[in-house]
Image 1: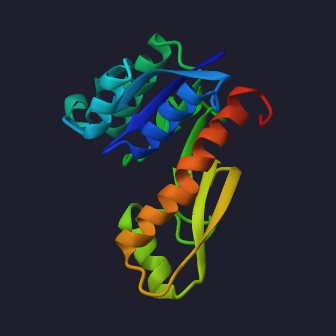
Image 2 (image 1 turned 180 degrees about the horizontal axis):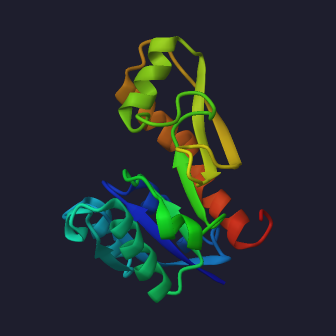
Length: 199
């Protein structure tokens, strides 16, 4: 069984999907051993607490605002916790340096569009859904992919499409993409990687 570390920045709905998948047996080849947030006081940390999962806050500010030092601090902590696989569950910080080097092909991210559409630098949160609506596409969705040095540029693991409906706002679409795609394919993808079915 592999040890999973989850990185969060907000409410932690994708973290909850992973916790639920672990409890229901969908995620059985890996175990969440720690949750790290780059922001104080976010609800994701409460979710970890309720689930009895070790958690910690590591901010860029606590690393003198240095991005490489911040990434090194996360990397050192993940190694200390013997983490095998890192999952980004709504983590709004760029990964680089030691963290990317030491966890090459072992970091997974969920992005709320069908990559290569509406992805890359600046595409996160509601901005992604607003861009899809502005462009007029009829289908969007979510993508789970490996993380590399290019924002949203790593190899795709799973994708799931979600229909856009008349009258959708960015908020309505965000909720539907989470419920119909993100919360389903993130646990599946993590299980595929932890079980060695995807290398």
